[in-house]
Image (cartoon, rainbow, N blue to C red; front, side):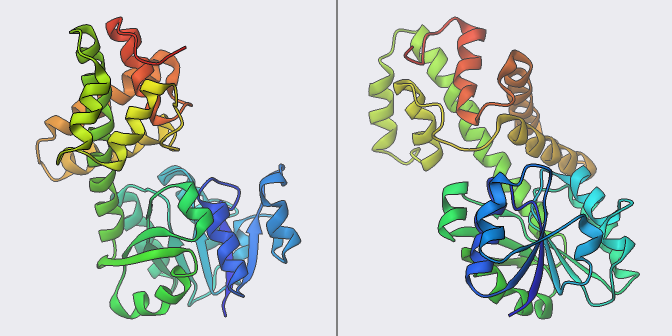
Length: 297
């Protein structure tokens, strides 16, 4: 059993992760914002609350599960961050969706103090997080992965060793770009189909019986019955992730025509006021743009 620190336990994904680490017998320390409601059960089950990330530096492993690179940078290298008090041998595991360039800079800074930064982003949803069935994609040296794998399996059904340091965050951006391409194209197809006079339920039946079908398509199809919560992922977070993907492609001098289109679809939906809603609200944005009527009200 390890002494584990956790930043982001009040989040949709982090709560389930922290709960399973605690349930498997690990000693858990948490940073907690002013509102303790989301982690009250963790504290009641034996987790310890600390004031800031620096107070976690005495742990063996610290998990970070926050929004993106700016937040990770603050947790690791900010005035009260982990590096302000960290000791040699600490392993920091970033489960956020972060920019690979930012991760590389932080990893070098950590390494200069004998600290290991591992990128281990997640896939699936908060439902699987609470069930202990997340997917984790790890970028790490083999010996570091071997040490972490049993800990990761406390909250993950599938743990993929993607490659060396940085590979985890890179492949997560590829994964999320493909996912959002499906969601944005489905919302657009619904709008065009409705305006063209197509019965969209027939479209759903057709796709459900063929190779185009996916869980993401089915989540988007629920909007036609008024369910805008079939995919529990904030639209602005999806926009951020695809922006990271286009930055990655640009840095590699690889054209990203589809990436830019997907990013702009999400940016438009956000500008129309749907950013804090969930990704299926792309359908609502398409209603505003096209005049289509898609979501029963």
